[in-house]
Image (cartoon, rainbow, N blue to C red):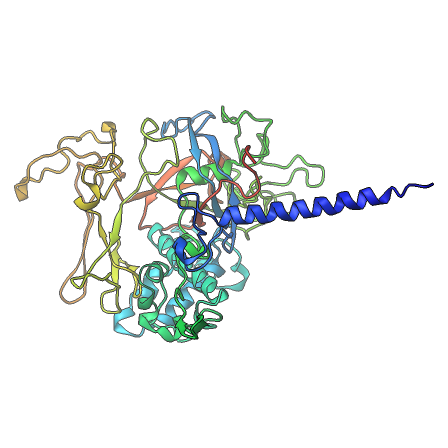
Length: 565
């Protein structure tokens, strides 16, 4: 008699399927059960009226995920400039996101057009907003060079649409990043049904504007309190809920997205210096180099600026100045393809998938410049420039939202006004003793000068602020930089006073920021990711641009599992 050998196999497959489903059911139940209380966290008794579950952060538009780790920060090549401002040290950077390319003219023009529509320059209250955000196109001019073509065309001509924006100072770059955050989150809310369709383009005005932090803190104040936009989103409208067992119908709750919803993205911002250098070096995938000794010279492998691959052997890997009077090489023979800047993605990406981390334009980062990196205090997510603030609370106990009557501007050293607080945003004030009293990790709102001990920055270290004419006494100050004074008189005219003191010995102060990476104007020496220079935050050039970054919320990696799994 023949034995049917397929029956045991079918039985085994059936058992495996049943066990698998049971396992999944058990796991699902375990995930919804609180380890603290035993309640089902997705029930009303568990404290959540809607279900919650683990959810990884989505990658925002234009961004690339950068998995964090350790790296050697600082210059390991010969310091021929003798700056001694980037001594090698070991640092750890958390995972984050960074723009795949530099912010382009087209991206920045989208920002300008939005400002012009929402804050018409023809109206008195808004006349300085559009102009204050506009790049300085005169940065292209040279006393002994004909560059009017770039002055007139570089920002707006479609031929330069995908070229990196320049003429943008640090303050303007920060404001662009804030605007981008709000526009991205506004689109996310609309996509997920929390806003009326086309809310980001319909009925938007200065009094009717969206801000991410305002939406999270006080959603009813968003769009100037226009609940028509807020409460008529797809699937999240304030509609009747399901009838209970007695037939009573309750109004649906939680019609606003919250942080716990997991759909809103963290803010777009300038990367810190540590993040930028880590991302540019891209040690991942370059295991032939000892990353703990930091022997990598460029964002790519090797010690040369030309490709060694057979397919494009001899091609330049970045856009930089190759010598005196040589900004691109001999025409028609493997030059770098650019006289000035070049379109983004014109050169190979590094191992993180980032383009132009060396050459094209140098880039603003968030840090305030200091010659010494204080690694004795912190070797984790290092950043100098923290100024902690909190939401301003009015006399009525509610948060204070900026209106079209109290737009805030920053007056630059040249007198230009740049908007730094627009309608719809929450007014900010410095943190006070309520937040700092008896704390160990910080004691003041402004931490820019924390542990700043470089006395060599000024030979007048103890005599920098004394003013005999005004009867003020001498006191210790770290950086003796020029102090230009710009005021607006009662008639609205600018009163500029240039600091002509002969005792000024440095350009370093709390308003100079680090910029990284070589540019089309720089020699190959500056392409090293470790190189660092500084520039006043309220000035712009034709060789400094920027790209945005975003913090990573949650796990270090999207794919790697814990060793315990």
